[in-house]
Amino acid sequence: MSLFRTKSIDDLIRTSQSGQTLKKSLGTFDLTMLGIGAIIGTGIFVLTGKGALTAGPALVLSFILAGLACAFAALCYAEFASMIPVSGSVYTYSYATLGEFIAWIIGWDLMLEYALAICAVAVGWSGYFQSLLKGITGYELPTALTAAPGAVPGVSTAFNLPAFLIVLLVAFLLSRGVKESTRVNNIMVVVKVIVVLLFIIVGFRFVKPGNWHPFMPFGFSGVFQAAALVFFAYIGFDAVSSAAEEAKNPARDLPRGIIFSLLICTALYIIVTLIMTGIVPYPQFEGIAHPISLALQVAGQDWFAGFVDLGAILGITTVLIVMTYGQTRISFAMSRDGLLPKMFSKVHPKYQTPYGSTWLVGIICALIAGLVPLDTLAELTNIGTLAAFTLVSIAVMVLRKKQPNLKRSFRVPFVPVLPILAVLFCLFLMVQLKWQTWLAFVIWLVVGLVVYFGYSRKRSNLNKR
Image (tube, rainbow, N blue to C red):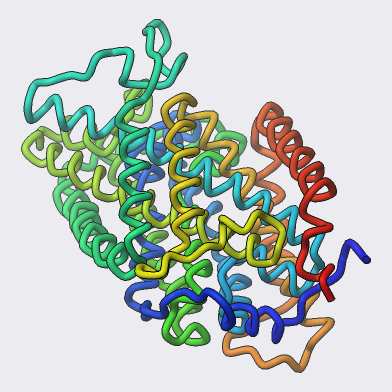
């Protein structure tokens, strides 16, 4: 059979409604909070400092550039999510438009993206947790258990224990039920948004415009490189589309959840970046893992820096919840199509969650989070996500051409201009990443090809027809 065999949208929807199904319990508010929960986290609380060292005060331009790439891709996601209310995100969309082989490649890519994002976020969470633990109790973990091997230059570390434990805790929470998880997520999202807004209100008074000069100390190359790095800060809105089967009214609620969450977070990123670089001269972020707290300390607001640490922990926890959620739904969809073993699509009879997938993902990611440094994880996550955004933008144009009369509750405006812009922006950011990141990405894809031709192709449900 053809490598590019497709499943019709009717078949995808029919499959999702037969056999083991997921509980429909999420509305627009839940989905928007899910998106904000995924987006605001490690990117704003950790990577803003690294971005400032690369771009200087012009980091705000880097966030705008990365945000534009995400905005164009978000519109494409919204169109697909509104007409294909099925778990699997861009993997499922690719299956309906570009064929099984491309769907497998992007599904394999998404597994890398989400898994490494979970691990990277867990490492960021660990740093803030250890800072807060020391500040409150004065207790410090044994050095060997504070970070992955080689993560801290000149310090002998063996395993990141807090990162390992938080991933397992999130897996447990998600295995108990999506509605229960979103309740916890919504509470933590509200808290961290309040913390970000308070930082804006408190920090605004201490901005020194002189710190914004020179505005672009490393030129446009610095802005572009920082954009490729802080792109990680936007990862997460696409996880909203993974909730398609659990949305009450997916045709209406999914596009709103995707677009609302991205707009809110982009506005917050721009304002926070301007204030942060206006308080602290960018060279002072060297070696700092908590840039927002540093800005408040420089402003003499130590009393509030502790609240920021707490907000960062809650904020990063919500990202972990949503990323783990997205990863398990991708593997759930691929397993249901026969491309992965059936254990990935087993649904718990009581909680109606893919518990096998949830725990397997949790254990693997917990181990990686304990053993791999943050910088490596962040860049690999970015290249995987940019590849996914590129393919979903292409898929929109393909489906418009193949099925122009298909009913769409939401339509990307100015096709093919906006999808082409999304592709160009994403490819441009991919080019800015290190060659080592590209090499690791290619190796992962080669492994995926071996798995597909050795296992998945002959076990695909399409072979049974």
